[in-house]
Length: 593
Image (cartoon, rainbow, N blue to C red; front, side, top):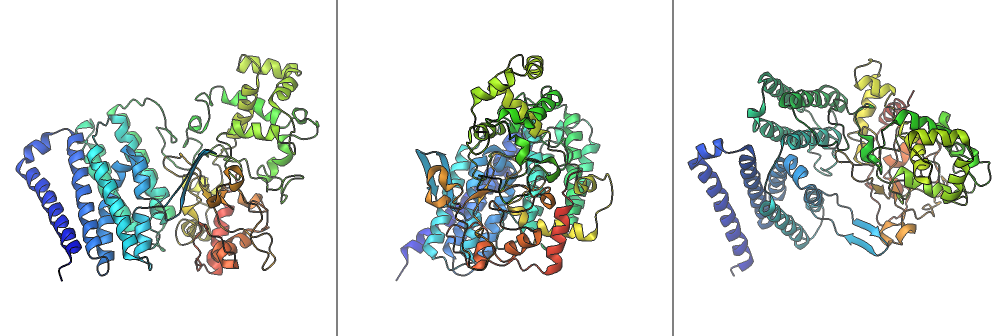
């Protein structure tokens, strides 16, 4: 009996093949027009050709899902990686949809707008192909991917200015260095290095599309030489790859070339995104635009003076109702702005560090606040902390003539908004990037041991730490766009007693009572972790070795905790004792001076 469904699929594949051939041959017949067209027209044609090839490969996968599925998937995935630099810039939401992890997606705008979405896309497909997922489920995912790609093709019309091109290239370079080489989006195949080669070929193609913009042609040759060296360096297996060397000698070199290029092009930027427009290192005080992470675009105006004022307020017990507690009571300088306790008196959660707190998009363990200024309001109102309110805080500041004089000079007035801004400015100043690791990766010294370098490479490779704790901040705010700070469910136990069970704290669930958000907590920074024990939201672990053992065993699943929506991979990382000690050695290099 003839299978009509199979015939239809084959016919669709044949049609898609013909369309791809038509595009290729028509371009061949009109080579002169193609070459003489604007870079945007050429790029748009190239982009849509690649989408067509991706869909064609997915069609082949759909027809042959039982046999050559991995071959077809790899081909489709390779085309998707060609699309990545341009797609991620011009249509970031669709890029994220197509490249999202195989984890239930929960969107909580407010209590009346909660969406729980099944994930689709390439990462999901990769895991499905390596499991016993039914063919019809796989086919549904393939269809959704193809439909989304077709929609993107229909709605993409490029109009890139010079600064767009710079931002696009910078995002692609940073994405590779901070997520691409970590295995972030290749959960099973771990073909990150091969995919990175593809991305770099596309970066080179994009850059060459704008050759006419260069005044100094020698810069193009510098790029060409760098691309050759980069491709050579990527010839390694996933576990053995030296990510420290790659970032230090390639990612940073490319960022330097990008600044050189934008100067040559005489690019004028209308504003800055998360990363500064002249960034040349990912591990520097000059890396991030702090205004991007603030609720005001004037966060850096008179920042030094405002920070000094904010520091005085931070340490002032008179702002609390009891006149006995200040921000510094819980956030002590000598403990990297923690308190060394499982939790402060009358609190139920461990005190997180304030160092690098500015470089995130949500605050508190449950992410309930969207800014530092907003976080301060919560602390002021909390009956177990300041037990006060904004009016009382403002009154307390107005009663101090020295404060009033400082605020009038810096802000022209005194109100709760500027009080909170001054305190937030002080906290933003705690983003120093002066640790031993920072000094070494920036070539200021050469003191890292082989164990510490191995630890960084394990952290960003085999151990998969960097798929949640993203360098350079090593927290959960996702590069290169830094639009969201991730929440994870890892299965933290109540205590270290065998069989103690899951922590009773439901985390994010308390905000909106979303069932799928039980036991979710924000991913904190690993920087200064050597000074911030005890660890986890409940302070259950007292040493980094305990923390690493927990992760190595598969989180909660490794200690017989059944957490339905655990986001941490449940399989063992298979790290040996030396590898664990190397990772801990690396973490200790992140301690700020």
